[in-house]
Every structure is written in C-alpha cells, then in structure tokens.
Amino acid sequence: MESFEKQNRLVAMAVLLFAFLIYLKTVAPTVTFWDTGEFIAASHILGVPHPPGAPFHTLLGRFFSMLPIPGEIAFRVNIISVIAAAVTVLLIYLCVVRLLSIWLETSQTLDRIAIFAGGAVGALSTAFSTSFWSNATEAEVYALSMMLTLLAFWLALRWDGNPGEKNRDRLLIFIVYLFGLGAGVHLQCLLTIPGILILIFTDLLRTHRQKDQVTVVLALILYPFLSIILPMEFKILMSLGILVALVVLRTAWRNPWFWICGLGVGLLGYSTYQALFIRSGLNPIIDMNNPENWENFKAFLSREQYGTHSITPRRGAVWTYQLNIHIKYFLQQFPFYDEGVAGGFFSLPVMQFLLHKLPFYDMLAGTFRRAVNTLGSNFQSVPYSVLPIALGIGGAIYHFRKDWKRFATVFALFSLMGIGLVIYLNMPDPEPREREYIFVGAYTFFGIWMGIGAAGLIHLIGRSTVSLS
Picture 1 (cartoon, rainbow, N blue to C red):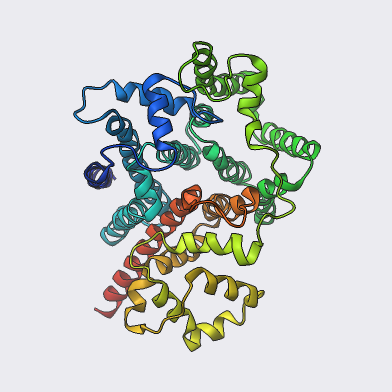
Picture 2 (cartoon, rainbow, N blue to C red):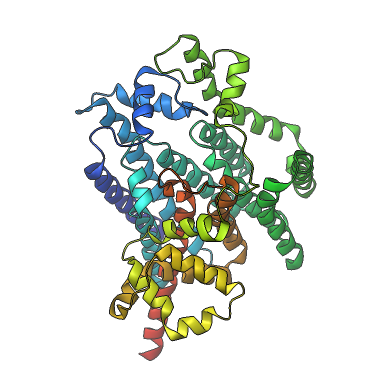
C-alpha cells in the first residue's frame, strides 16, 4: 500500500507539472476577448465588475497583479487561471484514482497500472479539451470555479471512503466553506451539492435495502430539475425534508454545533462579497450598479439588470436549437473529433439498426445530424475519431456495473451541469456568441468517465492476455 501511495503521488505530480507547463506556455500574454478585460481592470483597481461581481476572483486578481512577474498586468492576472486549471487537472486525476481504487486491487500490478493510466487519461483528456484549455489561458472565472468544484467533489469522495474515521465530518464543514468561497467566483460550484448529497445518503443508508437506496438516489437526481419548475414553497419544503432526513439518519448531526459551524464557515467564505460593498463606497472607476447601499447591493446580487428569467416559454426550440448546440459543443471538446467522420460512424448500418431501437430516435437523430452538420463516409478514421467519446460512454457503463452509487453521483453532476443548464438557462435563438464554456463542468465529469473507461480497457486487455498465455 505504501508503494502504491508513493507511485500515485509521483504520477499525480507528473500530471500536474505537465498540465501547468503547457498552460504556462499557451497562456495569453495580454487581454483576450469578452469579459477578461473587465475582470483584469477590475482586479487591478479593486473595482466592481458586472453582477454578481466575482469578488474572490477580483481579490485574487489584485494580489497577482502586484506580484513581480515579468509581463503585463493582464498576463499576471491570467496566471490565476493557469494555476487553478492545473490544480483542477490534478484533482481530476485524484478523483479517478479514488473511484477506481474502490473495485480494483492496488496491490496487483495490472490493476495498479490501470488505475494510474486511467487517472492520467481522464485528467489529461479534460485538460486539453477545447473549452477547458481555453479557460486555463485567460482571466476568466471558470478555471477557478472548476478548481473549487473538483476540490469539493474530491473531499466528498474522501469523506465517503473513510466511514470509520472519527473526524471525517470536518471534511463536510470544509466543503461548505468552499461553497461559500466559490459563490464569490461563480455559482457553478453550487451545482455540486446534489451529487455530494447522493454520496452522503448512500453512506447513511448503507445498511438499508438496495431498493430504498435507489429510490433516494433517483429522488436526489430529480430534485434539482424539479426545483427549477416548482414554486418556492415546494423548494423550501423539499430542502427542509432533506435536512430532517440528515438529522434523523446520523446521530452525530443532531448536535447543533455541527450546523452552527457549517453555517459559520459558509458565511465566512461568502464574506468576500463585503469587498464589493466596501470598494463601491470608495467609487472606483469600474463600479457596476454602484452597490454601496443595501438596496443597490441587493439588486446587484439578484442580477436585476438582466431582467426576469423563466424557463417558459422557451426562447429557442428545445430539440432543433438548444439541445442541438449543446451536443455540438460537447462533440467539439475532445481530440480526434471530426464532424464528417462522426456522422459517417453513426451512418453505419449496424449503428442505424441499434439507434432505431431507441425511444425518441427520430428527434434524437435529427438533433444529432444538425449538431454535426454533415454525414461523412471516411470510415478508415472512425476508430480514432470516436475514441474519446467511446471511452467516456464505455467508462460510464463500466462505472455503473462496478459501483452504481458513485456512478449516480457522477451522473447527477454530469447531467445537471449539462442538460440541466440547457433547461435552466433557456438560451435564446440565436445566441449572440458561442457559449460552450458554461457547460465545462459536464465536460469535466465526462472526462472522469473517460479515465474510468481507459482503466477498464487496460484491465480487460491485461486479463485477456494473461488468460491466453
């Protein structure tokens, strides 16, 4: 075991260093498009950028802008994303290794190779996917947000993996702090909550019937989707029900100090928003919405300048536009992808036969064809073109078969940060610009399945080779 931990640290550091050096080599030397100029300028003068303000990112940007690093101020602030993205890649590796170690034997050489290789494939495939790599090279909030998201997920896996540890609940309190801190970067990190709740409830229901566990998991997966459409009263009741269930199922959580500590550290993390209130009172040059009094501050946090938001009526056709562009963005993320080749693969007779057996095939097929634009016939390149997607899908199936509980966690995070955002954001037709970066969380958790798929493939080949010999 000690040898495994040592080797694991070496591989993890190699993955971290490799990603960091590539990001450092490709980082933007100055300002890039869209919001980065605003974030850089606001960081340099400690101003107030557009709602909801990203105060933690702004404070970090101010710190980095003062570092004695050669280059422009913009370059120094861009370095935040370089470091955050590289750490996220490390965390992806650690998450894949921890998930695989649940059913693969770390004492067996073949299993150990599969674990390390799977972790590296998952981490580096995500690291060099289109949107993730782009976010790593500019002063945007998404790299830092993903770092906090993956850190919370990794800590939740550690909590789940040590059921007998006396003080493991401290990890949950730290996760709450990360959520408060992450809210000062981007609210994306809060989408991790349903997945972590699945881990918690499956642990608390460990001795219950599997039927009860499956029911609770399905309810938690559906909970965020239902909360989008249900009135506020039902949301409050559902949330209270979850809290009551937690208290009933775990005796240690009946201690009020546990909840007081959680609330306290959450507010401590969220306290970065005080910086906006204070700085606005000093009237910096960039002072969006002037949140220096309570009324303006409340309007700033609730994003009143963007108007009201509703998921109905749909601002674009769901199947022919909104889901279409989501699939297009997804297929563009990973290496070896070619639109014509992918279309050709799904045009093969065997694929057509299988796909026609799926429910809602006509709608799905039409959406897929629009997403890839063309149907090609370059079948020689098909295995290379579909490899990343096939690894991810195969990894998801392999994960489900080996460990359905943690599969449900990853599935909840993948679907909520993908399809869930498609439903919630209700993207207008047409969008003023490409916005694939908002789904980077889904791409990241699919990358975890790619790593699991690679490990499963290595394990299968290794076992087959041993059997034949």
